[in-house]
Length: 139
Image 1 (cartoon, rainbow, N blue to C red):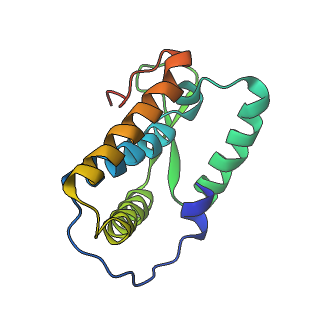
Image 2: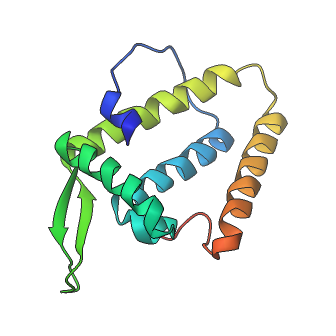
């Protein structure tokens, strides 16, 4: 969220994103979406880490990127969801990342791009395995 807080629009050249690279970028988008929909549950981190998360959420709320909402299930815990501004900034950031991936891998063969996507997926799955979290998350 700190990146979103300090994000500034820049002109980055780019073109269409190879589908294989887009898949990797889409996974990154899902991570950010999970953060906005309930970061404590999404990360499964301990209470000590929760304080840092709380500070990041507070900064995102102050910046107007996330808002607190009542628990739709009627529970006492407050939930969070992205604001329209937060979604717009996230969309812009994801578009810029896709353009950057396209630029960096422009000279790569389709097989190389698919291999990068496969390895990134494998990496994410391996990171989530100890917490028994599916990847990508079913949100």
